[in-house]
Amino acid sequence: MELLAKVEQALRAAIRDRNETAKDALRMLLTSLKVKEKEIKRQPVDAEIQQVISNLVKQRRDSAEQFRAGGREELAAKEESEIGVLEDFLPPQLAMEELEKIVEKAVSDSGASSMKEIGRVMKLLMPEVSGRADGKVVNELVRRKLGGAAPQPG
Image 1: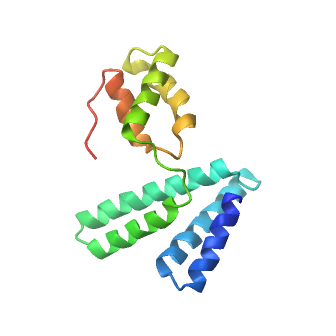
Image 2: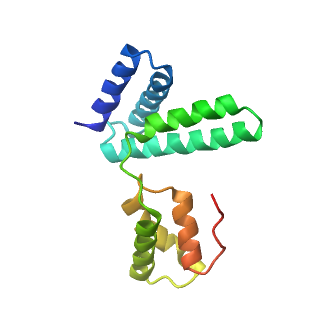
């Protein structure tokens, strides 16, 4: 089943089950997909839909972090429950060991040997791991591999 159809079906189920968190998250996702559709002037394909979902998950993580920093635990919990709803539509995340192997291969394939060439490695890497790994984590792994700044925990 097409990803957009799955999202719409999940929204109908959330409305029927009176699941407010899922309903809110899925309506927000469908709105973002309408914006994307107007932007590209065609129906988004599954890969583009996954990119939109990844962006929304990242926004929710950032929001949850901000809410926690501000002492608003209930709002952070709401954001995290929405993340759970959205992540159901993404492919499974890569394990760290698998991601490190992919990064190593991309570095060797690109012939990069210094931080100046990080762009070349990321260009090779991101299409392969898009939606399956956080871009920030991927960037930190590439920097570490190229001998740049040590990755930040988290």
